[in-house]
Image 1 (cartoon, rainbow, N blue to C red):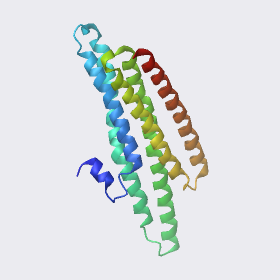
Image 2 (cartoon, one colour):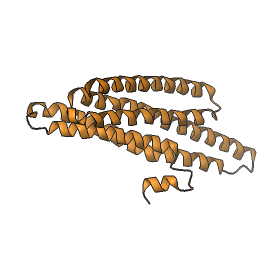
Image 3 (cartoon, rainbow, N blue to C red):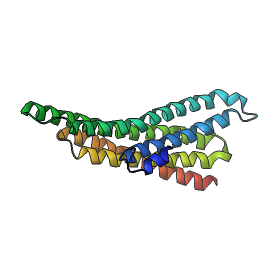
Image 4 (cartoon, one colour):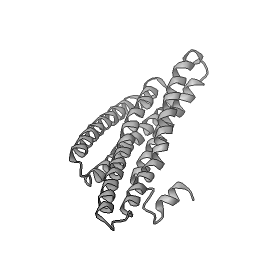
Length: 200
């Protein structure tokens, strides 16, 4: 079953968190593509190393985000496993509560990692918009939009999981940091739209 079909099925996972990570993966892949195309453009032989370094960065972002696609699903499954733990004794109940809290905290940290990685990956697309193949401007721009969607999509998952945490200090801290990442992503998107409108 392909990823889209699996997502469309009645299974609760993969869900929005995994999709956010996958959209970010595609964005980083587009930035990497433009870097690779630029590295092999005829007449740009002296720039090969410059573009290759950007392609390597893009590949690393892509690989991390692709890992987080499955890790988001795994983190959800950990919560489900914790809820299935026995509660036959006081010790069981305490252990179950601790397991649920730990799993929920991890399920909050994973989408935060998606946010941070997707935001960081924008540097590749930005560099390609400015110095890459001008015939691939739209590809780099779509990559930025994908990264921004990944940041905001993952933010919703951070919020929905953080609300269930008992450790409110951890929850409030990660929510504040996540909101700041959203602001940065929105600013980057606005900058790109202005740049595209200027160049095209």
